[in-house]
Amino acid sequence: MTQLFPNVDWEKMWAATGETLYMTGYSIVVTFVLGLILGITLFLTAKGNMWSNVVINKIISAIVNIFRSIPFIILIVLLIPFTKLLVGSMIGAEAALPALIIGAAPFYARLVEIGLREVDKGVIEAAKSMGAKPMTIILKVLIPESLPALVSGITVTAIALVGSTAMAGVIGAGGLGNLAYLEGFQRNRSDVTLMATIIVLVIVFIIQFIGDFITSKIDKR
Image 1 (cartoon, rainbow, N blue to C red):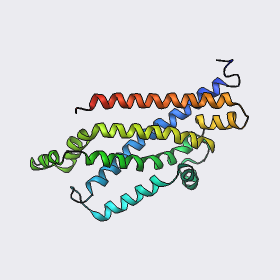
Image 2 (cartoon, rainbow, N blue to C red):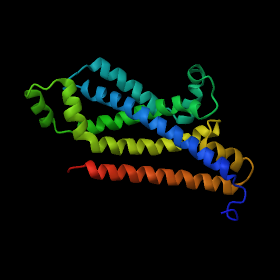
Image 3 (cartoon, rainbow, N blue to C red):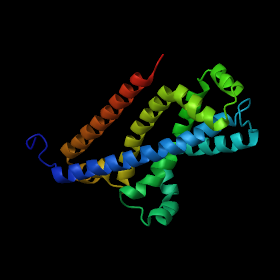
Image 4 (cartoon, helix red, strand yellow):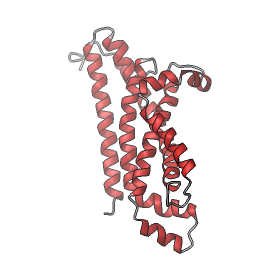
């Protein structure tokens, strides 16, 4: 390994890997919760559904579309004042979290909404006819019935988040992106950049494998 990657400082590489995993893991958890809430709200407030409300649906939809459409690198810059207020700094792994979450949650919300639309309306109507309350329908019908799609969606979102952490690293958020840029690109050490890339790919493959495995286990179709 030393001969293939002579310029790699393995202590720094593993530290950067830990930062990337921290940013990705924390962001996935918060994104899952926020995206689920937003997606369910979008679905239920749509025309013909339980909480049908055109105004609320249009407002949430507009917010989701706006933040989903902003390129991540621009979003980080736009959120610098908010990040400084929330975290106290714009440097380091924690400083990347607001932009990662705000960028990913709307994206996942749309995937949640799409997954919920695939739920058989007959099942929902059956639950209503049995006197089930809205929260019961959400927890006992909508989420269980759409679970494979929800897992697939968070898998796709998690992989996108890994890429976003690399971009965040370029402007000082830490992680493998930061290491590849500062230690690899700027110092013309291609082996450092290559190793950082390999580790990112391994992380992505592991996330995809776990997501596919869970989806296959819970998909009853």
